[in-house]
Amino acid sequence: AFVGYCYYRRLGIRAMAAEPAGERGAGASKKQRPPLDHTSMFQTPTSMSVQAIGVVRSPYKERFGTPRQATVWEQSIGNAPQDGEIHLIGDPRYEHALRGLDGFDYCWVICWMHLNTGWNPLVTPPRGPRTKYDQRFKEN
Image (tube, rainbow, N blue to C red; front, top):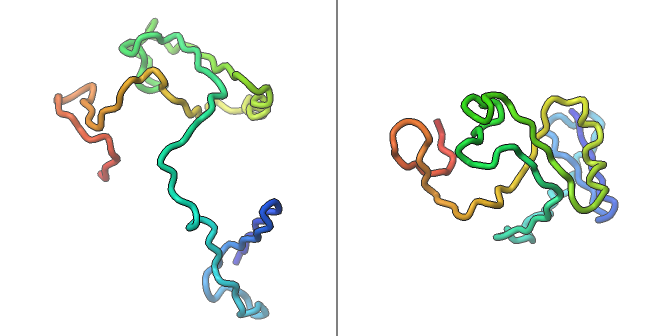
C-alpha cells in the first residue's frame, strides 16, 4: 500500500496519510502514533474578506443581453461569441500565476459579481412555469 508523507517545515508538523488495516507489510512496526487533529481548535469563519487581483472587461453591458453560460451565445450581441479580457491589477507578481496557461483551451475564473445589489433565496427560472424555487442544491 502507498503511504504518503507531507512535511510542513515551517510549522514543524509531520502528517502521514492513513493506510487501510492489514496492508502494512510483514516487517512493519505495529506501534502507531495517535491521529493528529489540526483543525478542531479553529472556529468556523462567519465572514471573509477578499482582495481583487483583476477585473473582467466584457462587451456585455446589460444583463438581458448577456449569455447565461459561456457556450450559449445565440440571441446575444451579434449572434456570435464575443471576446472579453481579464486585466490584472495591483501586484505585478500575479502575472506569474498565469505561466503555463497558454497551452489550455479553458481556464476557470472565480469572480464576484460586485454590481449585484441584493440576494434573494428564492429565484424564478428564466423558462418554464413562473414558480419560485429555493437556490440550495437539491438531490435529483
